[in-house]
Image (cartoon, rainbow, N blue to C red; front, side, top):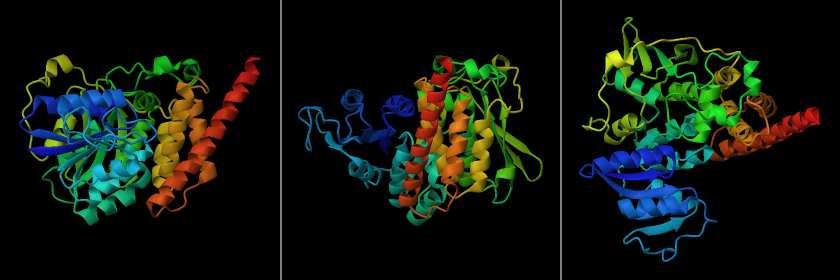
Amino acid sequence: MIRLAILGSTGSIGKSALEVVARHPDRFQVVTLAAHRRVEELWTQVERFGPAQAVLADETVPLPDGSPGGPSATGRTRWRSGRQALLAAAADPDVDVVLNAVVGAAGLEPTLAALEAGHRLALANKESLVAGGPLVLKAAQLGGAEIVPIDSEHSAILQCIRGSAPGSVQRLVLTASGGPFRGRNSKDLWYVRPEDALRHPTWEMGAKITIDSATLANKALEVIEAHYLYGLGYDRIDAVVHPQSIIHSFVEFVDGSVLSQLGFPTMELPILYALGYPERIEDETLRTFDPIRSSPLTFEHIDEEAFPLFGLGIEAGALGGAAPAVFNAGNEIAVQAFLEGRIRFPEMADVVAEAIDVVGSDEVTNVADVLAVDGAARAVSTQVAHRLGEARMGTTQ
């Protein structure tokens, strides 16, 4: 029985993970469920899975009636709230695997807490590695812990290289669906709306990651992650558009051999692999692969003129220091501004580029540095988004 803490249980990854768990009650036991502030959804999950504890990270949200600091009406579950409660859940010695699906830079500290405690980390919070990659690798080393990625691309790479000798990998190639605007030119993208960007052609995901997929910022974040997860330089990590989302990554070895992992686009497959790692757990619900039905499989170059956030992200990763954290924070602010209709689709890249120019790429050596950079980048990005929005309003009056 694998004991789980699921952080971010009310988000899309958390919900998918719980569906996987529900199909395997003989293999998984939910010890902790944690959410940011969706108390009603968390309550429903607690009633269904009966964890030992439930955590609301936002301590300003009242705990459910009958549960403040003690046994709740949901039976044996103990409710807690606040940042420290979330970190304690990540480091809980009664847990074997911590699934971190917390959204944004707030996921860095739980990642570090889980790794320092020696837990296996099923990582869906890409911001942890993007904003604090060296800190995460150091925590894993100190805690003797391992990171098993949940992103389909990184899960594919892990499955391909497992058992390979060190130094045998020559190159990684991540695939991208291309999002809903594949084939559009840069001029067309000035007129797309948030609701258009949220119509992803192959994946069902939360709003933030869906917009990131539309801009290809998500692929840049994944390249940065791959750099830290697999120890390859940015010149040895590529990305291509693969509209069918069947092949999730390629691994090229030093002898010229290439391996890839294929599967229908569902996050439940990499989640199941991460939770059960290194074992493969049989699951009859996941679809059987049909090569005929999946054909043809096609590939295209990424159009960096139409989707400049991809190139900006790679440049930030190569700069190192604070730059990846600035890219990540600036992108979060830009996405929110776009979703709220305050800036246009191409202006998200303008917000991020200016944040990197202003905040810079100084070295970060601890969590406080990362959080300070994150805050500075958010402040600059908010100002830039506001200025662009004001300019837009001025031209329409």
